Each structure stands twice: as C-alpha cells, then as structure tokens.
Amino acid sequence: MSRSVLPRTVRTGLASFVVAAALTGLTTVPAYADEFTDMAARATSQNGNGPCANGGYDNGLNQNNSCDGYGGQSHAWCADFVGWVWSKYNVKGQSMLTDAASSFYRYGQEYGTLSSTPHVGDAVVYGYSNGWAQHVAIVTGVSNGVVTITGGNQGHSTHPEGIVSTNSTTSYRVGQAPWGQTISGYISPKLQQATPPGVDLNGASGTVSGIANLTSSVSAGTYSVASVRYFVDGEPVSGKLTSAPYSFALDTSRFPDGKHTVTAEVTDVNGNTGASRAQIITSNGEATSTFHADFNGDGKADIGVLYDYGKQADGSYRTGLWTYLSNGSGFNQPVKVWDSETSGFGSWNWDRSKVTTGDFNGDGKDDVGVLYNNGQQADGTNVTAMWTFTSNGTGFGAPSKKWDNDSTNFGSWNWNRSKVTTGDFDNDGKDDVGILYNNGQQTDGTNVTALWTLTSTGT
Image (cartoon, rainbow, N blue to C red; front, side, top):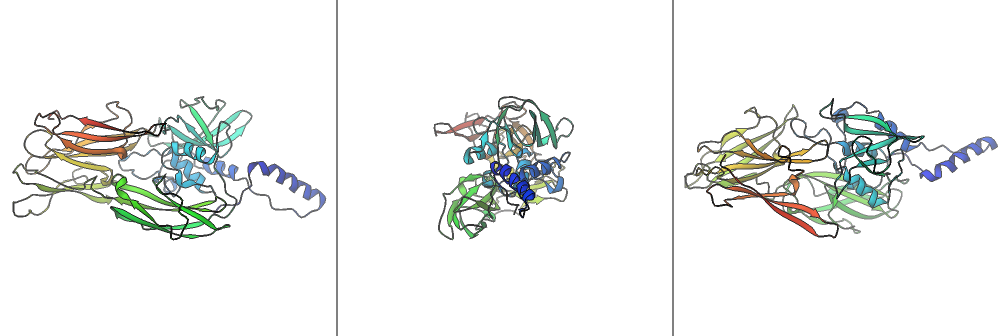
C-alpha cells in the first residue's frame, strides 16, 4: 500500500501550518510526501528502458505485461508504462485501465478528472476519437509555461521496440500536436487517502468454457466493504454486488477464445477501491483448436488439432498442427504435420489463432486457415492476418500469409472483434472466408456489426 496523500488543494494549508508550528514552538506534524512528484521521479527514472526492463511494465490488473509476446508478437505498451507508474500508488479504480491508451481517457470521464490543464502525475492522452486513442504518456513536470512528458513505447526511429523517453514542450494545450499527435486531454489519478479494502478472486483460472462461477473473499480497509464488481479485460461485466460471497455467473462464450484477464474490484462505503486479478483462457469452440475436415480428399472427415506447446525459454511461442486421418472405422495415429519451431517458422502464439477449414484452392482436399492476431503497432493500430496451410493429401505446406490489414492499407482490424467461418460464397468451387465483425456501439447506443468476405483466388 502506498503512503497517504492529501488532496492538492489542502497541501498549501498544511505547509503553512507546519511553518507556523515551527515558529511558535508547537509540535510539528510530519509533512506528507508529494506523491505526484514521486510519480514523476519514478517515471523519469525509467528513461532509456525498453519494454522488458525490470520484468516489463503493467498495472497488475487488466493490463498485459509490456514484455509479453516478445519473440514475434507485437504489443503497444505506452498504456502499460503509465499504468505501472500509477499502480505504485493508492490510485482508485485501476481495474478499468487496459493496454489501450483510450482507457485512461475513459478513466478521466468516469472519475471526473479529465481536464485541459496539465498537472504532474497526469496521464496525457493523444488522438482520442470514438473510443480509440493513439498514445498515452505521463506529465512529469509543469513550470513556467513548459510541460515535461515521459512516455513508454517511444523513440521507434532508433529503438524499434520502443523505449521510455522524456521531452518538454510549450505546445501543451488540448488540440495542439507537439510531436505529431494531437493532445486530447489530461487525466489526473484519483488518489485514495484511506487504506483500501482487499479482495481475493475465486473461480477464474486455467482454461474455461461455458459458465465460470465467480466469487470473492473480501477484507475491510479503513472502512467497511460496500460491493464487489467484476471486469473482463477492463470492461465491467457485472453490476455492483453487495452480498457475500459476491457470486456472479460469467458466460465465457461472450468473449473470443483465447487469453483474458478477469478482475474483481471491491469498493468500500467511502468509495475507495481495491482489486485482484486472474488470467483465463476461454475455449468455447470459436477459436476451434480442434476441428474436422476432409484433409486427404477421400470423402471421410478427418480431425485436426492446433496444439499449444507454450512459451519457450527464448521467449518465443511454439504451436503445432496435428491430424488424425479417418480410415472409415476409426482413426489412424496422430501425425504432426507442422511445428512452428522445428520448421524454422519462428514464434506462433496459439491463443492468437482462430482456425477455420475449407478447400481454398478447389483441389478436393480441405485446407486449414488461421485468422491470426498480430497485436498492436506503435500507433495503436490493431493488425490481423489470414494464413493458410494447404493440404497436399498426405500433409500440409508451410503456412502462407494471404492477407493482412496493415500491408493492404486497410486500416485497423481488431482480431478480438472477429468471428471467422468459410464457404463457397461465389460458387466457383473454391471456399472463401467470411468474418463477422463487431464495429462497436455508436454514440446513440446502436450496436453495429458487419459481414466481410475474403474471396479465394485459388492461390
């Protein structure tokens, strides 16, 4: 737990009281350290560090570690760095902060700390629009019309993976763009003066499917506990539950198959919060790590398995493709037809893969397609790619990337918002790929969904 802190408006009065006490011989009270200044010092002490310094950066709740995925997976980590700084202090409501820079803007809206005036310790969000933002950093100095800002995932011209760096500017007003990205607002962390309540999350671990029954064990801090609320990947999924054991039936089928962070946030009667998290892998058949198709063209359905070998010692991720060929009365022994490590392909992350099958080249043998999550680029753009493993009747060719939204200048494509299927939509004898895409919610509350197709050319 961090030190107690007084609101900024109180500090001047306290300082005056301490001086007066010294002059009159009164017993002085200990001065509270300025936690905002301490935040600035902590942030700038990381200058020059990359994403894996000190084991990586995150807030320990709904943020993934900045070092996660190195070995082939891209991860924009500016929000992780600011979250890491804030997490060292008694900041309220950190459960809603995620890897997305925009989550800090929403934090400011939620807690009423969004403003156009910079303060030391504030998050500064750039390029916020329609729930998305380009970048976030932290204010580490305000003096005589000059604002100093420190951020992670910067300096890509000399450090491709990004570093922590500090820069100063006189163009700090909202709407100005001191480094090419427009400032959208400043968000102050809501510091808590009380000891926050504690919470232990139960019912969320490992691979889950269907309903996960969540409960929480809580402990009071300075004040008694009022409620518990559950989040998945920074988004609230329950209301505020007021009765122990704070049970909630989480429908995991609402989320894409793969890794997710579940957080329990406890709130006391004075609004102070504490939280704990767990990571789960949802498996409800969408990512279809097990699938069936006629891989050898003999008219009998075979079984395929995309197998997760996990993270290797060098930080890369290893995945294998296995098949069980049907013999009509059963199945032959499993055969590994591809392995990301032994083939020399490089890192392939199983939980970033959504599998589908179809005869993409029209040769009568079903192939395997994978919609793959390439993560976020430095500017916050989401990148998704379509790969195929083409069947030759006895095995599969090496994976071949057929499309990605980055090289085609399509724009951002969020893998987590995509549901993939296949079919011969144009009746040319070759299966195509269909993707149902979640375009999110409009300002009037209307939900928008789109259907996209990737039409096979045969190659």
